[in-house]
Image (cartoon, rainbow, N blue to C red; front, side):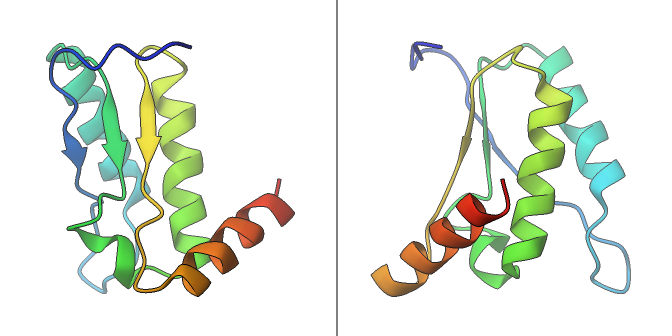
Length: 99
């Protein structure tokens, strides 16, 4: 998919339960509301949000859920923003091994 960076591409906030565990169902509902509102793309795990606080498995769960919810209807982008190049590389390798 060739991405046209035109329109609204919100950084989607990941929802959590009271115990701080991921609430993927609430996050999925939030994505659907954004899609129904006409956004042209979404950005998951933005660099100024919860991205740096999540464990690699949690990030993978969020990204997997987002891809399943979006189903190619709009472009979806993910951040790899971490506090060092080493962590970014480690996370990318982790994700590739899990495919």
